[in-house]
Image (cartoon, rainbow, N blue to C red; front, side, top):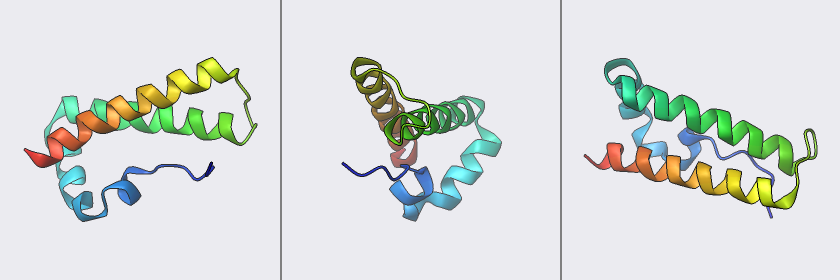
Amino acid sequence: MSHTPHELAEEFPDHVEKMSALKQSDAHFAKLFDSYHEVNRTVHRAETNVEPVDSLTETELRKKRGALKDQIWSYLQA
């Protein structure tokens, strides 16, 4: 398993400008974006054992990150 952080700019490189614009114009998108990055940092710290968590917690965090990413992708497709 890769321990590389899943940054949104790397996940959606063709939508960086749109994400930036949405962060400025849509409060809900900005909250999703910030929540994604918070969860993503937590997952990365857990994966690299900087702040270890049990495997169930790590799995739940990954699911939450995936759900947020799906919501962000929906915004980008609209």
